[in-house]
Every structure is written in structure tokens, then in C-alpha cells.
Amino acid sequence: MNLLRGVGRLLLGGYFIINGAKAIKSPGEFAASAEPIRERFVPLLQRVVPPEASAYVPEDTTTLVRANGALAIVGGLGMATGIGRRGGAALAATSVLPQVLAFRPKGSTAEDRGVLVRNLALLGAALVVSQDTAGQPSLAWKAADARRRLSSEAERKASAAAKQAQRTKAQIKREARALKREAQLQTRLARQSIEGALS
Image (tube, rainbow, N blue to C red; front, side, top):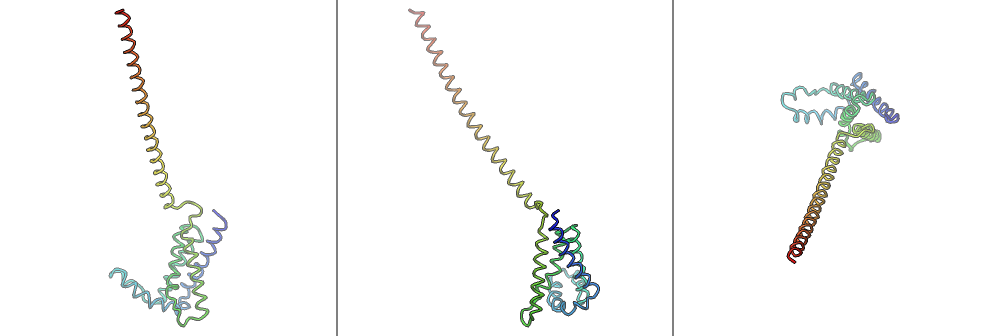
């Protein structure tokens, strides 16, 4: 494991763990900033999910803050420990996404814009970690490489078979010419011996 990569994941994961723990312990601190998110996304989520599940979508802001905090903790732990780091990073990114999407430029202060920039940076960092394969090729790359190798091997075998066929064809022609020359020589020798016997 690359030490720098591990330290970076640990620091990023630590941020999500600490903020998630704050959200679970004191959801009231985040309730005011989460209210616009609740107003925008809860009705949308209730329309998107199946009717049986829409009754379970929490409408209480503090419950949503705690659920988002739990999501951030799980994601942060995945990144910090390296156990399920890519999935953890995706969960952490998901926990930041509502805050980014709920930002309203109208009436925003410099502090609000600073928070938006921070959230965008966290979202970007989490997305980068979610795609990090720790220097190992991903499954998609392995599949593409296997396909490329198989295709190359098939082309090589087809080329070798075509060359072998051309060699065989040329060899058959050479053998046919040699047989023809042999037959002509035998015919000439037979004619000469008949002419010698008659004279």
C-alpha cells in the first residue's frame, strides 16, 4: 500500500467520521441547514420509491440529519480503515451530495459560498477515492485487457494458419512440379530405351 494514499484516505475518512458523529450526537446544530434539503428531497424521494416504502421515508429533519450522519460515519470508516474503501468513499460522497444540490445562490453569503466550495471539494475527493484501485488494475481494465489479449491471440493464430495454408499450397505446387518433371524424365528415358532396343 502506498503510504501517502493511506494517509490521505485516513484524513478524508476522519473528517467524515467526526462530522457524522456530530450529526448523530447533536442533530439540532445541523437542523437549520438541513431544513431546505428536507423540503426539497423528501417529497421527491417519496415519489420515487415504491408506495410501500414511501411510508418509511423520514420527514423529521433531526432523523434525516442522524441518518446522513450514520452514512458519513460508515463511509468515513470504510475509507479510513481501507476495508471497503471504494464503497465507503461512495457512501461518503452520497452523504455530501444533498448539501451540494440544495445550495441556493440567491441570498447566499460569502460564508455559504465557502461551505459550498468545501462540500464540492469533499465530494470530489470522495469520488476520486471511490475510483482508486490502489495501484491495482480494476475489474473493467482486467476484462478489457483479457478481451484484447484473446483478440490478439486469435488474430495471431489466424495469421499463422493462413501462412501455413500458403506454405502448404506452395509445397503442393512444388511437389506437383517435381512429380511432373519426374514423369517427363521417366517418359524420356522409356522412349530412349525403346528407340535403343529398336535400333
